Image (tube, rainbow, N blue to C red; front, side, top):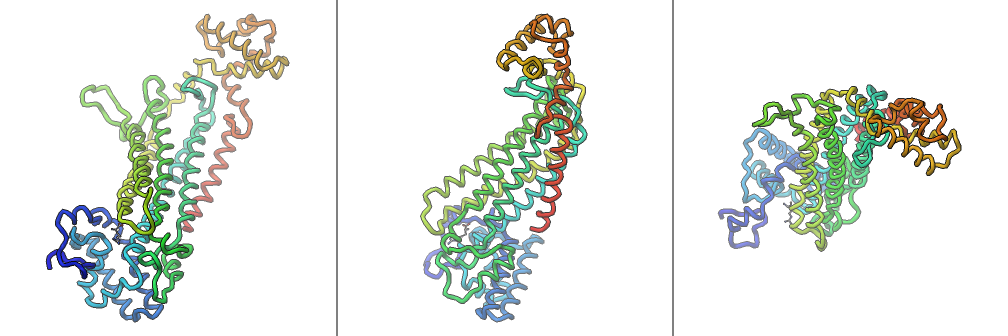
Amino acid sequence: MANQKLWGGRFSMGAAEILDTFNASLPFDKKLYKQDILGSKIHAQMLAKCGILTQEEANLISKGLEQVKSEIENGTFKFIISDEDIHLAIEKRLIEIIGEVGKKLHTARSRNDQVALDFRLFVLDSNKHLRFLVLNLITTLLNIARDHTQSMLPGMTHLQHAQPINFGFLLCAYACMFVRDFERLESSYQRNNYCPLGAAALAGTPYDTDRYFVAKQLGFTAPMLNATDSVSDRDFALDFLYDTSLLIMHISRLAEELVLWSSYEFKFITLSDAYSTGSSIMPQKKNPDVPELLRGKSGRVYGNLMSLLVVMKGLPLAYNKDTQEDKERVFDSFETLEISLRILNSALETMTIHTDFMLKACRVGHLSATDLADFLVQHCRIPFREAHHITGKAVAYAETLQKDLSELSVEELCCVDSRIPKEAHKSLDLKASMESRNSYGGTSTQSTLVQIESLEAWLNLAKNTLEEV
Ligand code: ARG
């Protein structure tokens, strides 16, 4: 019969063509072919080990599955929409290749635990891959940071000049965010590394199977405890979508800085020509399209998280077809992060850093005002509120002279208020201001180097744990 389904025993009529289009996940879930074939091979081995299949049957199934895999990889495999999904397409082809024995593969499992396995394996692989790229990004940030622990620029709050900091220190702040992203992915990996295969449709199986064998062979910590949870859980996908949302949020914040820094107003960096674009009408322009796109990509990644949260809300146990909507969201977030991390890394590696413009920017905005107030507190026993007020007067006076506070002479400073001693003048020095912030986590060169070293130590450990996974 035309359009005959593997599950078509009770049906007297083939599916309507439009249903195939609506129902099928094959156009996108064919990405899961490797995971599907791997899961099936281990499942067949387990069936043989438990005496449910003979060893010869399991070997024949494995061989057949290998052939299916090479057909997919060399492009000769025919993806037919009426086959519905990658699981049925592969099983059907297996039966065509090895005959009757192929029909035994689906013993003691269901497509519900099969898709839960394949998709979970995909998410875990993607998680590992993104962690690897995050480590590369942190490495790049630290390499730049090491060269710039003395490069002063204005630290900002409200995008207004606040206090002098060094560029290495600023990059360490981003490195810290990406460390958390790595750790977030790592903990999601550990939490979700449990095997759903063997749950069958929703209630387990009457066959005497060995779920621990399957879990171990596939690299999981253990089988999932409850069969119904195994087939209906998509928390692993949501964890991934949340983890990638935070990751792209951090990327987007750094991208925003790159956009600002590469403008004429800042001129702190120049993006390499290889990572910039031109304007079709204005010949002089060099546009920061790369960081703008990195910033813009956060929209789709957050959308993917919202989308799956809504799909899952209100689903009764156990499997429901709604969850077929999970895959494209995850594929999209993975692919978006994959390219975003790589491109951000290269853009950072190839940008030119203009420390002269950073320093120039420090000479506006009275960056050492807090230092003067602190000096008055520490050396003149003036209460902070009062010191704040006196410093405010000094700032106003500097502005009348069209100078930065750091440019006032000793005489100019002392005439602001009789309580300001001559020695207070040294607190206006910008470099001294930066270096004085030597507290743990502060911006002094020494403190920044401590941060870089501790991030590097973390990086080495993280590299090792990633290799072990
Ligand atoms: N294509 C389906 C999905 O992605 C596979 C599971 C289908 N199971 C079922 N009983 N219809 O969710």
